[in-house]
Image 1 (cartoon, rainbow, N blue to C red):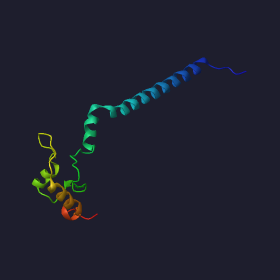
Image 2: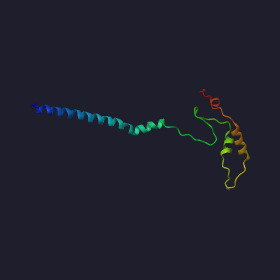
Image 3: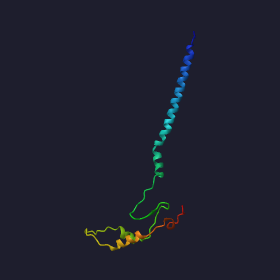
Length: 121
């Protein structure tokens, strides 16, 4: 017959309880460290890494590597291209220069690396 001292059992229970409390404390610390990513300051930092919004106009090529508009027509031609085709009375206007300009723009070949002086990749 084996005699068990109750003091040993109480000591083991205390030791288990101590380990359990240390484990729970460690889990609580890990949980608070993980929740720091949800702070408002990180939202501000994420804004720096977000893609920049840019004004995208029809039929105007953009060089992504140089982040610049690459065109070969003047501001007057640009206004003629994007000006409203209706006058204030609502009557449609005939604009043959727009058709000519579009034909010119469609026939141009853009070499982005040469026009914006980018290194060849």
